[in-house]
Image 1 (tube, rainbow, N blue to C red):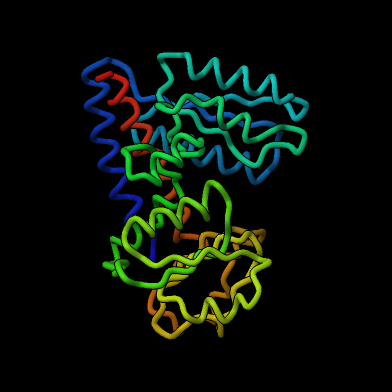
Image 2 (image 1 turned 180 degrees about the horizontal axis):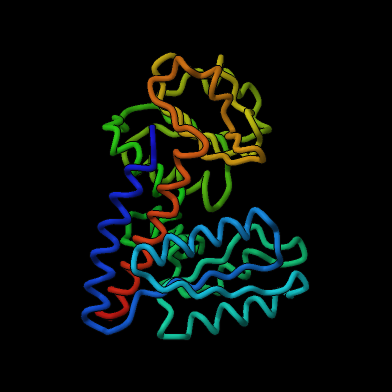
Length: 275
């Protein structure tokens, strides 16, 4: 399951809407990206998002803070961006340094600018089926499943991972589409046996090649949402060739994540224009 072509289509539509916004206002939809420290992987990822913004006709405001930034300083900066009418979406690149309270920082993002879907407000609204911004990776996963005409209703979906911005929202989105959902994690007893019963597997545990090929039921749909050092996912890709559909790493979930982020930034700009 390639996310590249799907992402291109999502970004193309977002770019058209961004151009409409610019025509109406004389300004571009603006995504502010906040990064704390200089972790190489995070720096590279932020740069990629900036490049995609520019190509899609969005403005990218980069806010780089030193490693020594405190929780209070980070929260103050995010609140400043939340109050800035020229900023339509805010992305806090995670993970943040260990001494920073990441949840407090996420919660400082104004809900109407939470285009990465990381606040408790967004999670609750999404879980109750309200029109809130979804967490971008789970949102991209659902778009991939739809693009490949994967039947979700009545299927058994196993989500391996319980992150508040990946595993948990992915489970809620699948549940909303009438899947029967089991949430597992690295400490789940009998994990392999549970995964073997899954029609849809979402691997989001953050461990390279954690999901073994013999865990996958023949014909199952496998979504590898992991990204580890060396361009390796959470699934042993080569050993899972008997899956019906499977996402590669890279080129699967990653492109759709960024595409949904840009789409939701444009949507945020239009909502704020009409507020």
